[in-house]
Image 1 (cartoon, rainbow, N blue to C red):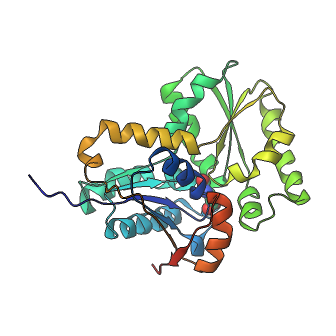
Image 2 (cartoon, protein in one colour):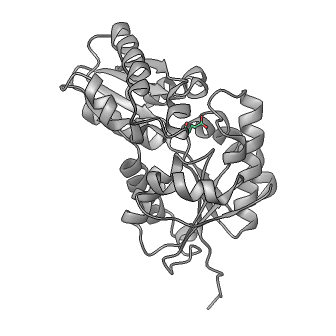
Length: 276
Ligand code: DGL
């Protein structure tokens, strides 16, 4: 029998946000091995240009490949919106044709049509994700009748990254962006949290949203999507090692990452610094 070397699954985000996704992935697939990489030294990505997000994301994906990952999940909407297509279509065939990179936008778009009754959907995301139009484009492919409106929330990631997400200042920006989204389309009954940082703001988001609106957060959806992907792709699944370890790497200081990262991951983590 051929001896296939087993490998961890890479999970990438610009910073801490992807930990909200990793948390759910580990719950769903505890037997697999994972390496998380947060590019905290260069976060946030949400306000950066297409070229910069693409360049940084590719560099991090290559780093995860060099650490043994055969499969990498971009647990970041901004990177999924601005870099995934190029990486899949241009870079993978050149640098690693047998490896795979997945994003978070497609699995989220697949779910949305199952929730809305009015057919009116809202998307909250970073400026990069919103201006890329990735959500309206993906949703249209799957559910052409849905009406999609978006709102960029450029202050939300900094509020989370600076540990201000439970303080009063956060209410101002959350209320402002939610009201602006709902004023574009009062029939919205389903809202996608299109940024992996936003689950930390969930209490305040709920406070400012009418109760009849369904909130779609991505952790469980992406975890489900990954489990389904592994089922459908045994040639990738067989390469993934299964000893149940999770390792954390950050491009910034490990002590800072451990403090903040534990809030996102829901339990204590110990990371290592990685220079790119
Ligand atoms: N967590 C990232 C996302 O899902 C955004 C954070 C950032 O702006 O770097 O879009």
